[in-house]
Length: 241
Ligand SMILES: [Zn+2]
Ligand SMILES: [Zn+2]
Image 1 (cartoon, rainbow, N blue to C red):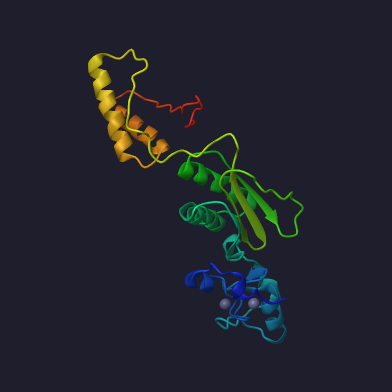
Image 2 (cartoon, rainbow, N blue to C red):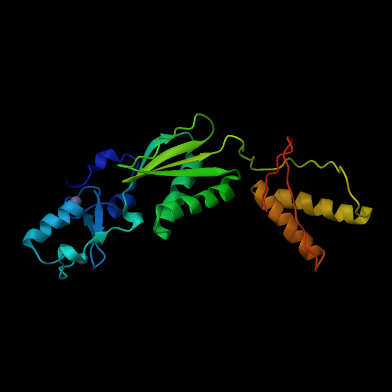
């Protein structure tokens, strides 16, 4: 079977289209394989080509069917959005994260593991990533609540979702301080308060705020190590150590 018709990938950018197009059938890769000269084609296209040719159609280098290997993960296929319950910005970031991990890691479980780390850092809650092969037997997961998306990089479908318990952090902490308990001297409290307010103003997310506070405390009080814990109103700790 040759490649997939490009009409099936309505969100494909011109750049991606080029990246994922088989030069033999001019369609989107279907079961891509990579040659020893690092060119990628649909498996069926290049196999058929090699029945009557002995060179790579792209650069005319010598090629035999034995020199074909499954394409690296980043060539799996162009992303197809199956379900999206995210806003445009979050969706784009999530797809970019999965794509980046596909390019970096060689196994699907590593892709999921590292994509989840990136999602946790970017969006500040506990994410899960499920990968299913087209012909696989993994259960179909369809979260009912919260932000999630299913995106298919043929032949693998990724579902990225966050667990029910965690909620997404707001991007900013409200700039209002109540001093609940301290054993610092008044002069130190005022220094720390200044550092905290400044970190809130300068940081784009709650996690970054915590890291910023720690870094500033450590440079203000040299030689000491500081840890900043953040809790939400329900007492659930937001950042982990
Ligand atoms: Zn093809
Ligand atoms: Zn070639």
